[in-house]
Structure formats: structure tokens, C-alpha cells
Image (cartoon, rainbow, N blue to C red; front, side, top):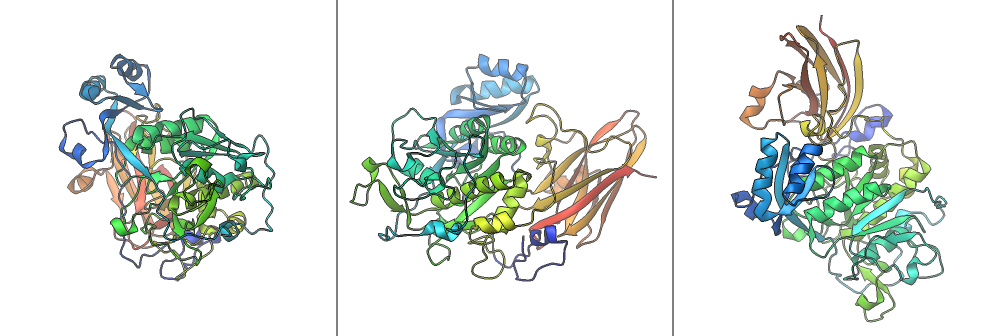
Length: 544
């Protein structure tokens, strides 16, 4: 990130923009969510707005967990997650725990779409697309293999004239219930067809994955899984909740692993406590705020440390089903407000970048999209607009940072086999020298965890050299199930190095047993650092 105080750190060009210094009051960056264990009747369950008739239970993927879940009448929503009637949740969790494969359990959280109530009638001449994409910038041709944008939303009206001669489809069979899914799809993908408006990438391949009006965590999770199965390159999520949901987080991590770029609306609750929203605030998700025609943050858009960039979100003229057109004209077009409509602009731009820069990884795409934004307001990153307002041209020109190939590795659960079925390949097995470049971000990539195998009666030495920011280095035993918190953290460590600033961190530890042992080596931003981000080079070898 660029410097929040307006000063730019002296770093290599590819990582110059990845270090930021806080100068505002923002919520503290939470550690990445760890697998919860909440069952019906637990006190914490009542604090979450959820569908009380259903429960989500996660188990290590495999035939044993599948057999137990099906015996209990559970339904798979993808990955390791199962939905079960709440009355059976305790029995299912207990059976999975006895088998040693239980990963988590939680209520089926509800989300809301991120559409605000328009403050004033706005001109049908609104030129929001010109703000994010220069009219003279030619989009890539659309082919059957062009990157696919999946929009998880309400059912769209595929009969709307706006989608004629386009490439927008839906997997929905339920009836239309509102304008939201049609509006977001048109913002992203409306073709040049002589009708109505033009989307960010006109005529792009887009797939609507319908969810009900009350969006449960299981609805979000299962449709993220469906989007990945359908070959999506980008997933747009114009909905959110102030409560995190681990099943949703797991599916997003699976999508990251599958090479998908993730985008979500920041939320419209600035005047209602300005909470962190989920999935927007989860790792590896581009979080999009809204600006008005003056390129200033809107009156409703959430402003916090999770915001990556912004896009127009006020008075957005877009297509809506004529039967639900509320502006009195019944022409199938309406001006709408909300971060819901800012997010698909960024999603379409990310797909455009992926089409023209296919060599980039999903995290590199996210970096060039947010760092290529047009700076507005105070110089540098701001909690209300992030790095600035979306610029397709800026994203296409922006130099990408080096690849961070180990993602997702934001916690032990993602590398020990519980989430993905098989453990991640060890970074080092006791021979030679292993090297890895990594990026950290308190929200987008908070922790990097690596499996390391140390031979019997041998010692290992890991060196973390900062390229920017202030990362620290830690070692946990292979028996650890999560990154400890509070007083347990220091007691659990095998070794650690927390040198402040740009100084190199070095850890050395020994396997005293007669067998090779697994350890977890992890890096994260220094707890007392004012920087949100860090970039580092990591090497590991035998200690002499």
C-alpha cells in the first residue's frame, strides 16, 4: 500500500506501494478467523443473526466424514461444509469429533444485499462508466474462453432488452423477486447493442448465481462453490453481514486456491456503526467502497481498514426488471445507490485485467487493480476510498508485485489438511536451502504459515529479510491446531524473532526427537507496527 501519511517508503519499485502507515482511528485488524465450535443452545449463537432451523458443520474432507454426514441427513454445500437441521447439529458434531474429523460448527448466518435508498432522483445522463474506464480504451474482444464473472445475487431478468446480444446467463429457476441481480449484472456486462447502457466490460461473459432474499451463509458458501465449478475467474459478492461465517471463509479460500479473484461490497452502514462487513473483510477479497459524482465518499459507504478501493455508487443508472422499476417510467432503467453497484465495476475490471494480463496470479490481479486506482482526497490510502477510485487503465499499466505462490496459507487449518483434505507440501524437508517471497496485509493476507519438516536430532535456521514494512517470524510445534492468542501465544511458541523495523528476523530451533518432526513457521506484521503491510524474503536451511 502507499503511505497513509503521504510519504512513500524507499523500496524496490514492485513493492513500493505495499507499505502503509496508519494516521486514522480504525478498527484493529482482527486475526484471520479460526474454526469456530458453536452449537445450538450456546450463548454465542444468540448474538448472530441466523436461520435458527439450520446449522453448518465442517469436517475434514474424506469418505469417513461424508458417510457420517449423510447418515445424519446433512447436505453438502461444498468443500468440508455440511448443512443439517439444527436439532441434529449436536449429534453430527459429536459423531465427527469421535471420528477425529470435526473441523468447525456454526449457525447459518444471514446476509443482506448492499443497496442503499437513493437520496434524490438522478439524471439518466449519469456517466459513471466514464469515471472508471476511459471511453477511448478498447476492451478486449469477448470469446468463449474469456474470463467468466460470477455474480452471486438475486435472480436476474435474462429477458431484459439490455442483455440482448450479450453473454449474460443465469443458473436460476426461481421467479424474479427484485431488481438487484439484474442491476449488478448490467453494471458489469451490458453490451453495446443500441439499447440502454453499456457495462464496464461490454458484453463480457457473466453468470448470475441466484440466492434468496434472506441470504444464509450456506447460500453464499454453496454458490461460491458453484461459481468455482463453473470456471469463474472473478466472483462478485454484493452482500454482507457484520458477523463472519467460517463456511463462507472456507469456500473463499478454496476459490483463492483455484485461482479466482474475489470482490465484495464494503457495505452501506456508515451511519449505523460502520461495522466490518463479511465477506468483504476476509483475506484475499477486494473490498469496494462507493463514491459520488464528485469522487468523494458517499454518505452511506462503510469506511474502515478493510477498504481497498472505491468506485461510483450513487445515482448509478442501470437495468432493472420493468415490473420492478420504481422511478415512475417503467422503462426498465433506474438510478440506484449502494456499494452493491460499485463492486461489480471492480469485478468487471478485474476480469478485463485477467483477459489482457493472463500471466498474473489472482493476488497480483487484486494488487494492480487496487494500486492502479486514481488517488482522490488526501494523498495515499484512506479508510473511506482505499487507494482511490477504480481505473481500468491504471490497473492495466500497473507493475505487478512478485508472485506469492503459497496462498492461501492464512492459518494452520489451511496447510494441515483439515480444510483441503491433504496437507500442504512442506516448504523445507531438511535438505538444501528453501527460499520464498511473501506479502502480508493485516486484512488481505494477515498471516503466512508454512509446513517445515526437520530431520531427527537436527536444527533448522530461518531468516526473514524485510523488503518493506515490519514482519516478524515465529515457530509452532506440529501439534498446533491454530495460532494461539492472548497469554497462550508465548507459551506455545518453539521460537520467535520480533525485531522492530526493517531489521532481519532469525529463528533457530532443534528437533530433539528420534524421528523427523513437522513444525509450523509463520510470518505476520509486527503487532506494534503502524504499517498495515509487509513484504519479505524467507530462507530456511540446516543450522550449523
